[in-house]
Image (cartoon, rainbow, N blue to C red; front, side):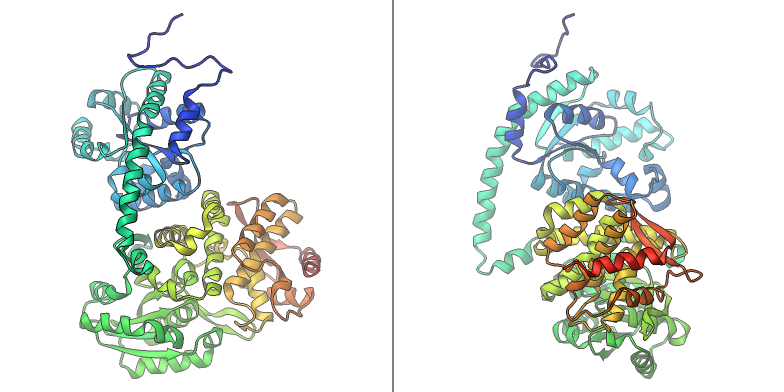
Length: 604
């Protein structure tokens, strides 16, 4: 039977015959993704799946990835519980992450292309293809489903018409337009492939000219760091930690330190501040913070402690509490934790204790504290018996994560923070881990990628914290690698010359992966991937990598029994069924752990 195709359409080749358009399309893409944009009901998912199969690329649906990241909550449920702003923020981060994960065919939600930052990233990493359907066609398709939250109105057709009118000028910015009409899907795929063949050469020429223009502009800067500083200066991400009346924002971006006074006045007008920081951060960044507070009319006092884990002690805690009280900081005022994880934990515990609880703001200055310790309300100090054994849950009122301060970190400290970034991929986001595997260098050197990595990490943690604030359940997943790592830190006497926290976590995550493989829970291949990636960025991955290590297996096991997850004298570990599939394993056999540690200590 002869199939009648629209004018200009090319019939698909018979099965087994190479479609000569495919090599031309792949060459024209130059490694970029095909990103389908357009209104709900325009056919992005259906056409995208078939197009991906024809050109031999993986297909990904951004909406499906958002649902997976939200632990199975549907998009209408996300809209209803958190609102559209929260959804759009998460959607943008998911799309940025997917575009970094390799060449794909990506179907986006109807509103995704409206975000200028999303369009910018699509332009960098992909070719945008607009499936343009008229109102009649769209209504015919969307009536079949009730999963469009923006159409839950008294007059869905009128709502859709207004949306289409508002969005059309933005969709017209796409690289390629294909009419999405009432035709068989295979016909639509043919028309889309023809459009790609026809338009990709033109796009390549236009982008080549734009690249030359951008290069010429960049050459006008005499200092290369100036060009990097200008790039994305206003790029911001906001992650909401949803805890009812104690909810707060994590603001992630550049130049935030200079604006900190404005943000503090916004959440606590008229409040004074006690800044708690350490000597290193004070030397590098305190003047900027104080200037911003003074500009906003905020009265402040500054309390400086020594850097390192030694400041997370009862003695330092007592001294800082006394200094806060001496400065007449009241409950309506703010404690500002300005530093890395040590300062954040200490200052947070001071805020939880002074006057039986004061508000506080986290301004984390290390990658580790930006992605982990500043978020979620865990505060505390160390004991001779173990790390973080004295403390309280006390949520901040605001977190300001300025990625510009990361430029003053040593490479060792940045790597240590990166270990915690990797953790978020391992516990529940395989695609995030795959992105890091493919492009870790970008996180180390590119401000936009740092913002994205911090935002994805914080979003993962915020989602878990909202479900389990006080670690009665799956919040324990955030401790992947920590049962091992804390034991290593304790036996290294919290000597940062020998081992910093992120390094202990890196070794601990490798141990957790290898122990999981030994128990038959995950493949050895996945365990090797974890170790290989951490080693590739220069992190230690073996116990013997710790300088001057002398502890034996029984000593490590004894230190593990001081872990906060121990229940009824039985060990609890976070183990893995695979990359992105961590779980809580209770009552783990101690002899199995001891035998495993003996073998790990033999590795050189």
